[in-house]
Length: 495
Image 1 (spheres, rainbow, N blue to C red):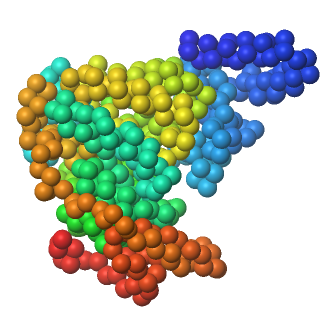
Image 2 (tube, one colour):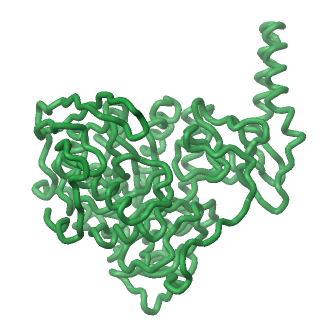
């Protein structure tokens, strides 16, 4: 409450200073300030809804943060719009402008095959993990004995627009054992540079799949559509980035909208170890990853979570990021919180407070998910670097891939023993994917977007020979033969 009050007070003081500079500017600025905030008195926080974000009835570019039943008006960052379903700022094509009626969607699942609540008696590591509310530390460790794992994840295509920023984060910093810090990349296809992806994999970062097309509405599609998107993306990575199928074990559904049971049937059939598509509303105590043997231990924010049991498949959920005052809102992706007006020190303090909710309580893995647009705002980038340097100075903080975190969870070790923990060492270079070539092929390829009636050119960078056509759904190798790909679990067991 105090931070939000201070924000409003500073805005007023700033307007006052501008007044002294120029009377005409004062008139315009005061008018704009009044217009931006005049609705604040008229907006009433929904009764019983608690703290949170709510749509501005006047425009999709703004929203209200309700803190202790008092509304604070916020603007989305440039180019983003408020989505009243997921309660965050996102791209215009994804935003559902509000206010929307809060009705519960009818269930599409038959109740006879639903997963049951956690049974810790039958659910035992290393193959199963659950707890009644999702907050229990694996192995019965105390928080002080538990390493605080930080999971840096990056969504979308890797290319020249983001690769230098990612390398700046990852290339020089070390974990307590002297090994470089690691990240996890969920790759989508369009505009992706596969030579860069191969370099990231060779450096020991984890590569997962986020679908080929990032199509809207995939959460409502069936098994075959998820096979085409996820397994097709894995095949593109295998063919053009030279990463073996066995090294690609994680998936993330586009827009954090899991595909109900169909997506997880694909994960189960095609040898994935984990999914990371489920967002969690703001909770006081963060949720640990869990296997899908049992019912998920928290609210399903998207409404499209799995309902069946998928034994042994891990879910690595995205806990909501927020601070106590809800300044900046709450968000699963960090770039969806409204921090664009903060300076680097304020960004650092915001991240630090968010992180300490994990570090001082149950030490659930602190996932930091990003899109490219975080790194396009210098204040956010600098605040992130300051936070990472602060966090890595702690002897029990480790920046690891999702698979490394799950490996620890299956056989938990105290933080004091991790300097010699074999799965987190970096001395086995021969186990990594091959390095990329020095002179990759830069392929200019014809591509007809599904929603267009014309062809355009897409560029693909790879150490492999250029394909005949831009790879896409049904033709992951770009042969030019539409519908050539037929995936079955049996054929996919090969490397």
